[in-house]
Length: 348
Image (cartoon, rainbow, N blue to C red; front, side, top):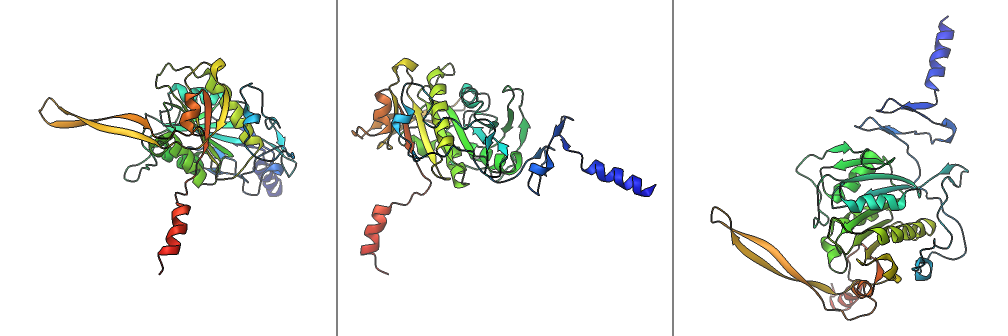
């Protein structure tokens, strides 16, 4: 009798399924899982773990991000998108995990358009700020607690969480507590407003992408040169999909960061994509001085964007001529030219 009871107990432990917070049992196949099948976080949701591998198509065309593959004809890039359920080296079928975040907040139209643009290219998970965080740069929250709240109703069929912290906090929490693994790709945006030239330094959108890259997650930040809540994202959605398909099909580097900006023009006026460099430009700033109702002074930052760079290979030039600009950036801020000069003159 005791032996039969133990057999029942043993069979129960082998039940191929996990119960989530919703009470729904998800079917799993234990033979396809790594030894460590998952962790349960504070949310009570069990996450799959495993290698951060990306299904890609092998071809001999190389990995260079070429304008000819990303032209204005709207056709998929050469090599195509990774098909849903692509084969991995072990023969298993899986799809890439795509983390989506932004700095305008989870309710911004830009992030909704970004999610719609990449649906079907992988498992999309959204972790974004609960309020606008523009201009936060690479700020992180240290002295205050962070909170995650489910917002799955915002995006049809997409798991979504809002975070009380900065865009960088969102990436950190997504990797450590929501996904419990590194995603295959991080997408940030679509930002309302330009992030070309010097804006990349201040941008919360781009800082989220940079944080992902620091964690060895390829990342792309997207921005539209239109601050309006009613901005038209039609063209941006088209080119987001083209670029993401290319990045998934032709992985270049685990520290990849692309700063992508879209001109605010109708789709038929966009000429294609230009891989560019960051223009030398900055804001000529001023502080307007005012008095509050208590007669105490306060200051309001204003400024005018001035481009000092006349090159035809810059992001500013590309956008002014109706191209989508793509600038590869990096978190290594070493000036290697100056380093070489200093090594010759500064002897220890």
